[in-house]
Structure formats: C-alpha cells, structure tokens
Length: 196
Image 1 (cartoon, rainbow, N blue to C red):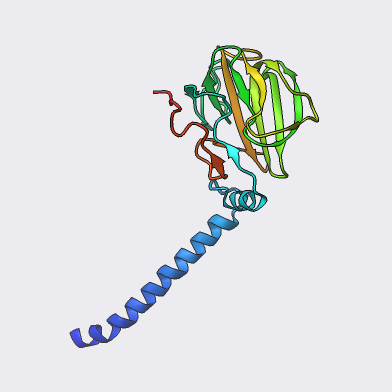
Image 2: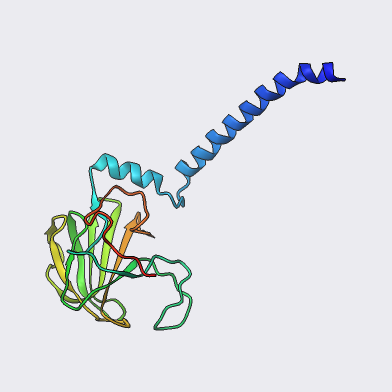
C-alpha cells in the first residue's frame, strides 16, 4: 500500500501546485478586472499613467478627522443609516481649504444639504468635493492648481458643527480618500489626527 502512495505523491504535489497557481492567477485577474473592486486597481493604473497625483488631505494644515468614510453610518442630523461617502475634518470656521489636485471647477454654489460646496474634476476619472464651506474662493469653469486655496471652511448646509466634508470620486464612485490606492502625495507626513 505504501508503495502505491509513494508513486502517486509526486503527481499529487504537481497537481496541487498547478491548482494553487491557477487559483492565484484567476483571483488576481478577478480583482483587476472587476469594475466594482474596492482596490480600484484599474483606476490606480490609469491614474499613474496620466501622471495625476492628488494630495491626501484638502487642508492647509493638519486637522482632526471626526468622521471617517463609512457606508453604514447613522447620520447625526437625520438619525437614519446613510452612507458617509467622505471624511469630515473638524476645523474652525475660516480655515483654508485647498484643492487636492489640479483640475477644473465644475460646481461652486450653495445647496441646502451641502451648504456652500465645490466640485473639481481632475482628468476624466477623478472628482473631489468640498462641502459646508463658509466662503467660496473659486468660480465654475476656473482652472485650479494642486494645493491652491479654493475656499474657507464653515458650517453651512445640513451640518452639526464647523467642519469640512471631503469626498474623492473615482469613475463617479466615492472611495475612501485616506486608504484608496490612487496615487497620493502625503502633505502632512502622518501628522493628521484620527478621531478616537
């Protein structure tokens, strides 16, 4: 009996290795090819090819993150479970808000829920949104440089206190700006404080 197993053992090892390699290749391809992949691998690759690099933070100095990206957050105003598709920075009213990337302002106006807000388009696949601003310093159609001061933070719209709500959209889908693998430049080298 042991003699027969001894003859099969090398074949089993080769078959298992082939199966493991095929499984790894298939899994890697699915992550790359999936349009809903949380890794945004395709977007990250096109981002690198286009040369677009965004700043990680939309502020001129470090501020505390008070509400992180969360698809199942309870909204503090409505008390309903609604996705929080950005991050909130606790900032005194009037603090400088900067564009995280070069682009064009596609929206700069007031909304009842977002307050004064700005949307900037960065190339074909990327947009950033800045909400609850006290003062807009740019206009629709204006070209913006990375790091340019675009607004002052505030407490406008549906808000529970002074803060900046910041969103990053890749192919019109909100992604977590603090953990996405879109090419980023860290403008504070780890000095930002997360809510505890």
